[in-house]
Image (cartoon, rainbow, N blue to C red):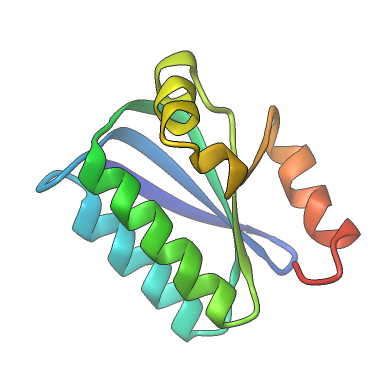
Length: 117
């Protein structure tokens, strides 16, 4: 998995490319979110446009980092979910936890609309 971090105002965008699975990306993702959160960047959009697969460990780190950000007064939102990832998030009912958006712009704009981020 490859991860790139960009910013748009007070929102950080994580572009994830590849597989978010145990042993191949989960640690990279955790470290990136922790680094952002501990430096005060707690509003994150996770761009899943180039994610090819998410396993149970990947789901676990998404939930874990969602909790980390919420505990620090921020939020983790997802965008550009492809069919396979969408099905996994739907089956596990995680789309009831994560706010999801069809576009990155909509996800970023949602932080301005939401009083809690």
